[in-house]
Amino acid sequence: MKSFHHPLSSSGLDRRQWLKSAAAGCAAAGLPMALQAQVAYPRGPVTLLVPFPPGGLLDSVARIVAPSLGQSLGQPLVVENKPGSGGNIGAAAVAKAAADGQTLLLASPALTISPAIYDKLAYAPDDLVPVASLGSLPNVLLVPASSPARTVKDLLDQLKAKPGAYSYASNGNGTSLHLSMELLKFKTKTFALHVPYRGSGPAMTALISGDVQLMFDNLPPALAHIQSGRVRALAVTSARRSSVLPDVPTLQEAGVPDFDVTAWFGLMAPKGTPTATLRRLEADSAKAIAQADVAEALRKQGIEPQFQDASAFGQRLARERKQWQSVVDYAKIKMDS
Image (cartoon, rainbow, N blue to C red; front, top):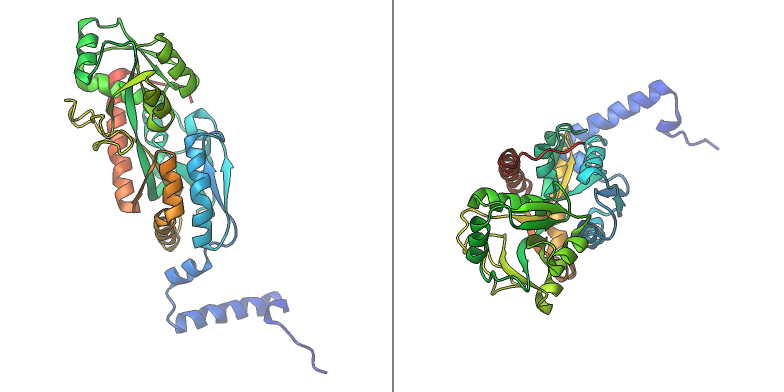
């Protein structure tokens, strides 16, 4: 009986000849190389790296979106947390990963803030390329229930009347909530002393007790305190009102021009990732957040599903980097890496 001889089990020379013939066959068939790369992706499970600890809002988004996106890709999307240095450790890990789409970053506004406030980073901003934006939510300007300020104007009048007499809380130095207040100070030429806390929970406790007089917070964790009457919402930071707080004006409506800040969530990939892979990820991201169960789960977290393609998302990143650089320069904020 004649034995079966597989071309890949032959000598090194025969193997190379066989691979060359196979490649020539693909070319002869007219199959574009970009399409060949797309067909080959993904090669196995894809890692979705979250640059903050488990249990936070960014981590929740990852675990909501991962099953649906993995299903579209045909491979599991494995969520991995790599916290530290305001998200920079995780961002650097993805920036240095192989540019094959097998490792992705779930990014937030920290990605556009870090280049402005850190003198040295272990990666350059253009080491990561945008894939798609998945959703966003506003921050909300809060005062204690005991505050005499009923409107943004009331608050600004107080700050202008007694510069330095008021303090504001944040969830930490260099966060989007810290920078949101610095942006408000920049645009209104007011001053309040910054008191950073280790997270939004302790900051909210300080606000409720009156230890500080104002703060910005992400809408979801603040909502229960607003509804209970322990704190008062004066405005949201987005360009449009929130469907969750339809009676609360935007800061633009309250007289602060061009104030548009949201906490957003989006996918980034290492620079050099094949275009076909990026387009595949972009298209599958749109499908994932369009699914009713995914959209509903995001909205329960206070997040509005909001797809932006790579081009629109990239423009957003560029605008925000410019905005935060201006704020950081004005407030003279710098942090050690």
